[in-house]
Length: 430
Ligand SMILES: *Cc1c(COP(=O)(O)O)cnc(C)c1O
Image (cartoon, rainbow, N blue to C red; front, top):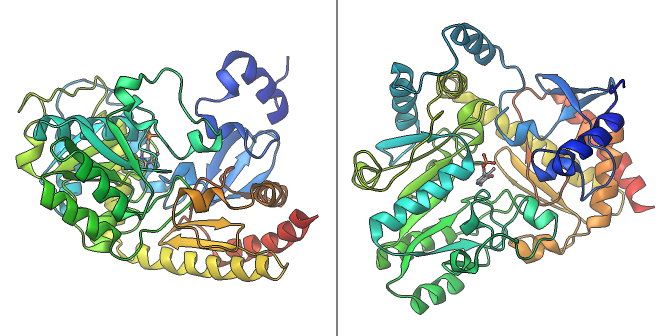
C-alpha cells in the first residue's frame, strides 16, 4: 500500500486513530474536506505530502512566532540531543529557563514547568484551590483552558467547533464547581461572586481570547476582574498559553498593565516542543510540592530538549524586542488589507485583532463574546477557508480559532494573502 497523498493518509488514519487525528480541530470537521498532511515546514511556509506549498497562519497554533525551523532553535536542539533526551533529574538548563522567564514576565517570582497548556491550567486551579481553601471558580464562555474535566464547561476551541454541549465523561460533581459568565460581562461575574461569597477560589480568563476566534477584552474588563478578586480574596489567573510572549515579552500583563496572581503558559514557551508552565509570586507558588502540600509532578517536566528549544526561542524574543513592533506592523497591514478586500466583494465582516492574533468574522455586528462569535456566518467561513486553501493560504479550519501571524511573513506573503482573500470572498458568496 502506497500511502503518499493526504487523502489516502487521512483514510488510513481514520482506521487507526480516532477521527484520524491526535487533536480534534485538525480533522477539518467544521470546514469539511481532507486536511493536508504536512511533511515539513520552513519560515512562513508549510509543505504537504501532495507537493503543495502554503503560507501558514496557524504556526502550530502559536509557537512558530518567528517562523518554522527557526535556525537558532534547530541548532540548539541538534547540539543538545546527543547528550541524551531525558534524565528525570535537575539540570542547570531549568534554572536558566526559569531565570529568563522570570526576567521577561512581570509579577512572577517562581515558575513550575509542565508538558502542556492543559497541565498548566489544571495545576494553577489546583494551586488556587489549595491556597485559598475554596473550591469554585469562574471561567468565561468560549474560553478554552485545556481539556481537564473542570474546564469542559462552555468551552471554546474544538469543543465549540464540534458543537458539544456537554462532554460525556465529565462528572457533574466536577462540573458544578465551574461557574461561567459571558466574556466581557463584569455584572455577571459580580452576581456569581455574590451568590457564592465564600466559595470562589479563582477567576481564570484568557486576557485576549483566542478560542472563540480572537476576542478582545473591553476597556475596563480585566481591571474590573482584578478589583473583584482583590475585594473577595479570589485569585486572578491569566491563561497566557496563547498570549504569553506573543502580545509582548511579558504577555497580556505587560500589554494591559494588569497584575495576575497566577499565570499559565504553553505554546510559544516550548519553541514547538510540548511544554507548559505556571507561575506566580513566591508566597503562592511555595504551596506547590515539594515546597508545599499541593501536589504536582511530571516524569518529563523540564525535559532538556524541550527546555533547549523553548530557551532558544524565548532568548531570541528577549534579545530582539523590535520583533513585537514588526509583528504589529505586519498584522496591521494584513488586517487593513483583508477588511478592504473582503469588503470590496460586498461581504460584511469584522476583523478582530490584538498584536499578532487576529480573526475574520463574517458578520455585521461587533464580536465581543461567545454569542456574537457564534452568530457569524459559518457557511461563508467554510467557503472562504477552502477558497484560501486552494490558493495556498493555510488558515485555522474553524472560526473559533485565532490566526497567528509570524515574523517570517514577508510583505509579498501578506499581499498574496490579501489578493487571495478577494478571490476567496468572491467565490464564497456564490
Ligand atoms: C491551547 C490552549 C490551552 C491548552 O494547551 P495544550 O498545550 O493544548 O494543552 C490552554 N489555554 C489556552 C488559552 C490555549 O490557547
